Length: 122
Image 1 (cartoon, rainbow, N blue to C red):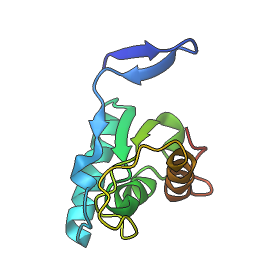
Image 2: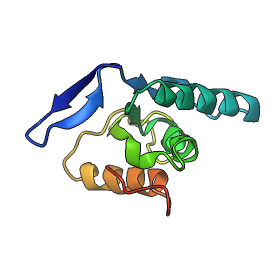
Image 3: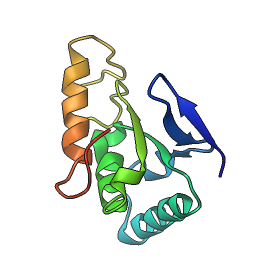
């Protein structure tokens, strides 16, 4: 795997990342196992940059917490927010980029992704 260095701190990320669009929507048990296995195989091949979002009430971030258990410190995880499709409280709003929504989205994402003993959030 080739790697790139980002920013002043030279964060090392794989040139090929993994986008978690396969995690969007509630997955059945079998599909969840397949999605986790594919992600873990990508990590085994050297992918350390994972990109996700808080789609569908954040269920993909919850699935990532399961998939990354024990491997969290080896991963650079990026997430996006503001796409409200699937959020039960959104009441017709599809996008929210207001400054006051930023901390709400960040806190919710950290709660879903961070589990004790799974590493620190990044």
